[in-house]
Image 1 (cartoon, rainbow, N blue to C red):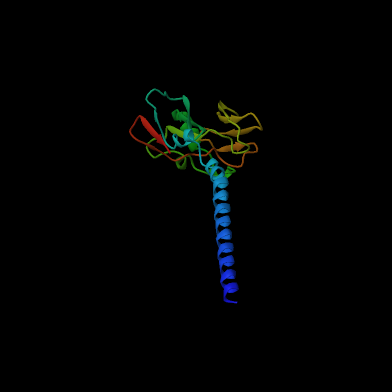
Image 2 (cartoon, rainbow, N blue to C red; image 1 turned 90 degrees about the horizontal axis):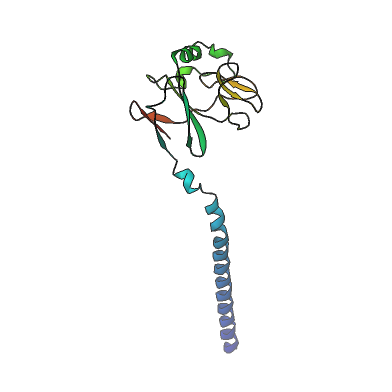
Length: 177
């Protein structure tokens, strides 16, 4: 009887070893399959390289706009004229769909520089510069009109053009991101 009990203990030990080994191999296989999937969800290296971008504004004249890429998105930097600034400041904010003062969209002391993500907040189209009923931006896809401060004034867009995080490094260089 003692031989049979000893024999059963060996079977239990072998069975436990086989189950443990099979479980470990299944776990390694699951990790091996999941790793590439999870890794593919990370941002690509070219987008990460653009986590911040510095732009020299020295040659941008009043009334001109430039577009730069940041995190795969077009960013418009507009050197506004005094007339454009005045028009933006005189708007009755309570009449806007997305009420925001012009001063909330620019940096204090640098009101001539307007920095925005140039993607329509309706369906993601790229609006045209100096177009539309308010001489700001116009999205030809569905007819959204933005003013000289990038605020939605007419059309289906629900929000103003977004203002990314940015700061002035000095008088001529701006850092976005």
